[in-house]
Image 1 (cartoon, helix red, strand yellow):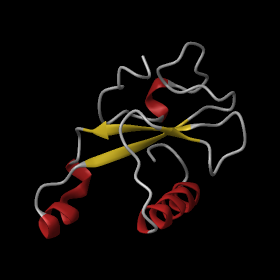
Image 2: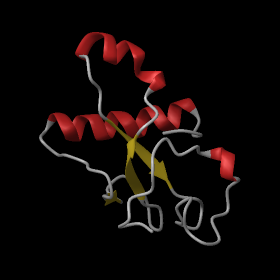
Image 3: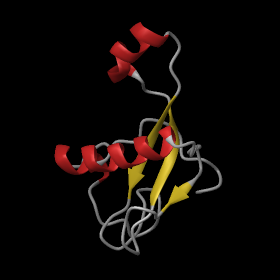
Length: 101
């Protein structure tokens, strides 16, 4: 979760990891509000930039990854009009799915 403080990102990723271990699957273009208070969706995009996952690639070979995108304080995502955070606050590591555009 690019741009969030480490402790916050770690908490979200651990919650999502527990759900994945229990059988839930997230996919590009999906949104969840399960761990946030409205209006604060978390959206998922396919990551094309996986340069930071070198240890994972060394262990598992080919890597496919999702990026969890967090919304601003008004519930807007980076590609939505009136998004309040600076563009470089949360670099997008892949394209925005058409379902979001």
